[in-house]
Figure 1 (cartoon, one colour):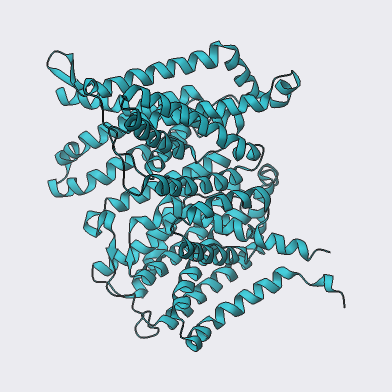
Figure 2 (cartoon, rainbow over the protein chains, first blue to last red):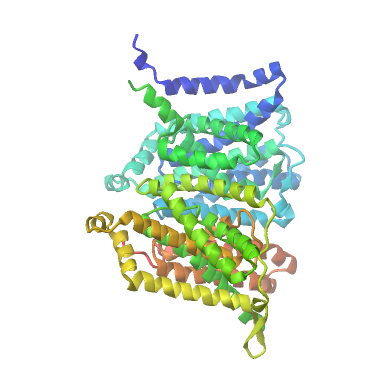
Length: 316
Length: 305
C-alpha cells in the first residue's frame, strides 16, 4: 500500500461533489437556509467558471468578457418573461441560442488576434454588450429588470422551491463538468489543447486552427449562457451590472484561484472566492482592500492555483 | 454650423484626453511588456489628488502641480512595490494582479474620501467662454485642455524620439539584455517609464475632473476606451495611439451628438430615440471590429522585435 499513489486532487474533487450534494440536507437539519442561498449562487458561478476554464485552461483563449454571456442568458429569460412568455422550454433554449450567437460573432472577430489583444478585445466587446443592455430603456435600462415569475417547466420542476432549484443548478453544474471532461478527452478536445501548446505545428499537420477554437469558444459561451439563465432565476432580477467587466474579472480569478486546466479547479475556485468574499464582507465593509492585495500575492506566489498546490503534495 | 464646430472641438478634446491615458498604457506595454489594468486607477487617483490639493492650497495651478507630482510618486511606488515583480510573467498574471490593484484602489478611495463624489471647482479665469471664430464661443477650460494635451503629446514625441532618455527607452523596448549589458540601469529606466505613464494618466484624470465629478470607478470605463484605442492603433505604438485616440474621441462625441437626428430621418422618431443611445455607444466597438477584420495588428503596428 503506497500512500503516494493517491492523488489528493481526486480526493478534493470527491469531497466537493459529496459536500455539494449533501448541502440541502445540512441546511434542513440545522435550519440554516442562508448557506443554501449562498451555495446556490456559488454553484451557478461555478458553472460559469467551468465554462470559462474550457477555453482558458484547455484552449489557451484568455477571454476577459465572459460575464457578457451571464447577462445575455439572463436577459433572454428576463425579456421573455416581461413579454409574457413564462415557459422555461422557450426561455432557456433562447438564452442558449442567443449566447451561442454572440459567442460566434465575438469569437470569429477576436480569434483573428492572439494573446493580449485577445484579452482586450473580448473585454471591449463584453463592455459593448453592457452598454447595449444599459440602453434597453424598455427593459429597465440601467436599473435592471425584475422577473416576477421564474421559468416554468410545466410542473416538472418548481424553480421557486429552494431545494429543487438548488438541485437543478447542481445538475447543470455536474452536467457542465461532465461535458468538459468528455470534450477534453475527445479528439476535438485534444486538437484544441494541441493548439494551445503549439498552434503553428497543429496547422502544419493540417488542422484548421480557427475553426476548432471557434467551436470551443461557442460551446463555452453557450454553457455560460445557461449559468446566466439560472442566475436570473436565482435573483429574480437582471441588470447590466451582471455583465460589468469586473464580473468577468471575478470569473477569471475563480478559474485561476482553483487551478486552470483542471476539471474541478474552477468549482473549488468559485467556492473559495465567493465564501471568502462573503466572510470578508462580514468582517469589514472594505473587504476589497484585503481581497485585492490577496490576489496580487496569489499571482506572485501561488502558481497553478489551489488544486495545483494540492497536486504538488501528492506527487511524492 | 455652430453646433458642428462645438461638437468637433469636444471630440478633439475628448480624443486628446484619451490619448494621454492610452499613451501611458501603450508605453508601459510596449517597453515593459506589462498589461496594466490599474492604469485607470491612476487616472482616478490623479483626479482625487487634484480635488484634495486644490481645496487644500486654495490655488488651482498649485493644486494641480502637486497632484501631478503625487500621481508620479504613486506610480513609482506602485512599480517598485508590486509591478516590478510581474515583468517577464504571463500576461494573464498581469491582468489578475492589476485587477486586484483596482479592487484595492477603489476601496482605498472609499475609505479615505468616502463613497460620495468630489467636485473640482474651476477658477474664474477658466470658466469664461472664448470667442474662437466670430460668433462662436467655446469654454476656455476645454480650450486649455486641448492646448495642454497637444503640448504634452508634442513633448512626449520629442522626449521619446529626440533625447538620450528616449533613445534608452526605445533601446530598452527592443532588447532588454543588450542595453543592460551596456551598463544602463534598466530597472531605474523602467521605474521612470512607469512613473511617466502614471503621471500622464493622472494628468488626464485631473483635467477631466472639473468636467465630470470625481468619483470611484471613474477610471474603469475610460480604461476600456483606452484599450480599444490601443487595439485600433496597434499595441506599443504611440503614433497609433494618437491617431486612434482622436478617431475614437471624434466618433464617440459626434455619434452621440448627431446620430439621433440622423436616425430620425430613417426611422420613426420613437424607434430612433430608443436605438440611438445603444447604437452610438456601439460605434467605437464597431470601428474596432472593422479595424480588426481589415488589419488585425492595428493601424500602426509597432515593429516587432
